[in-house]
Image (cartoon, rainbow, N blue to C red):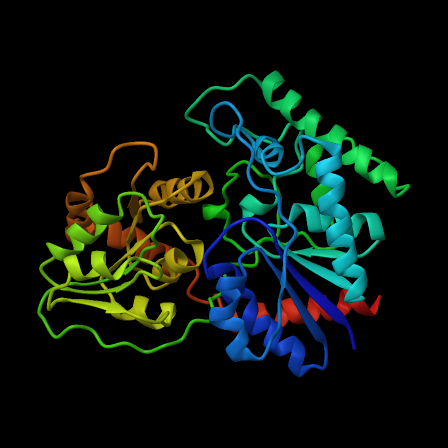
Length: 395
């Protein structure tokens, strides 16, 4: 039986762990050992302890300031240890040690570029496990992440070359061949994307294999407030921009709302308490709640947002950072939702939510997405992923 390691380096929230958890359980049932290396152990405690898994802390470098917002994927890496070869070497050695201690035969990389680099240095196969954002397309330079802002291709290339130089100095420490461009790092054993073509953060990726979004392993049942009108489910976080504006919009809703807002202060929740609002203390079954709701409000979490789209329901998205905003823009391009730019002042969320609920075009576009993927089966995808993992480790 195989030793599998799930690596999560960048990002936050339950979706990362929750999406892999059903697969991890199946792998365990098949006799494999599943090792978890996570960037936020407190998130792991919410799901993994009850499931009987242990976990380890991912090696991470606190974000370093750079002028302006990140322009491409290389610019992101420069902020997290890839600007200095000693910093990166320290991270890679730490990842290598985890891989060696666990005797892993495959790494499942959920936005974990340094785990991928460490696996490359050890000759361990990697299977990507995440959205399109986690794996930039095989282009040089990696594309502009702010398409509304023109950026010279030479500037993007120079950013990537800085990262490539740092990576190659580290690879040389382990007598491994260099890479010639940044996206080459993501040439792995299996580069399948857990997304849909319409929702890829990189719309001009080119040919790729999309497996579709997987459900998060969050399955508590909750009851809607018994009031007339539309039903809205909201998934918010303390760092959600315009959090109070979102709560205010839901408070003004003439209908019922279930709100899951982990980490939001009780004082804030009490302030917006109302008979038509139910603040769930536990995660909910997203697929079930989406089928029951009229619309969703998310922080542009892919798992939560796609659950609503597959149910034919429109979404209001309040992204908190660039990755989420790029995803929200793709949903907007579908016509199935609206997104609030995190870099702009909010205040119109009540009107945006009213549009989502009252303008039939949003629901019809979401319904068109659901119809297109009506035969999409998440259980089949999970079965195929497990089979592919077992195929790789048996080679």
